[in-house]
Image (cartoon, rainbow, N blue to C red; front, side, top):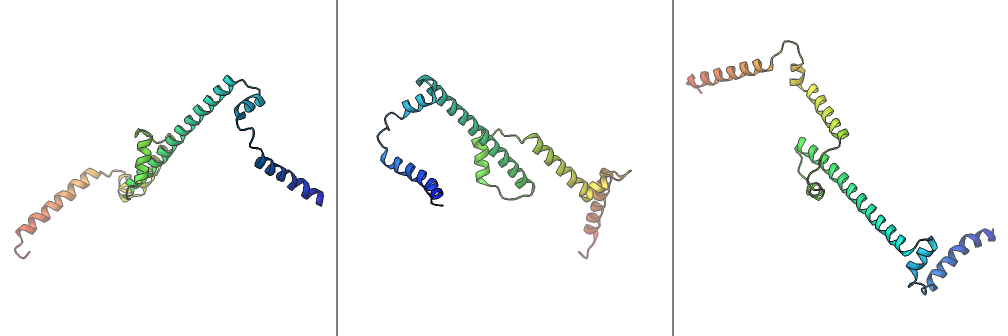
Length: 157
């Protein structure tokens, strides 16, 4: 039992005491790191440049994804007449303001709007055979016009 405790705690204790007392080799940190990895100084610098470029590329992709999500949220805010959010607008502007929804998301939104149209009363009426929405609109406007004329002729109102 004591052996297990010594092995688990002993190595961590050695690492702790070694890091506290070992402040002497700070000047040779880059050289020892490159030599330990088997790289020359030029190879190490090239490796660091690649790391920085990869990080920048990941950051731009991340910013683009954040802007796409913000665009989707703003779309739903517009659709349901919710108040706008400044952080979403700023994320879209940070990505260049030229953000499009991914195809999958745009397809999902299109399917949702089609389902909502089918579920609405006008969508149900439009799907009936022999039903002309334009003629119904014209009849409703004509009836409304007749009601206005008869209301003007009425002396009681």
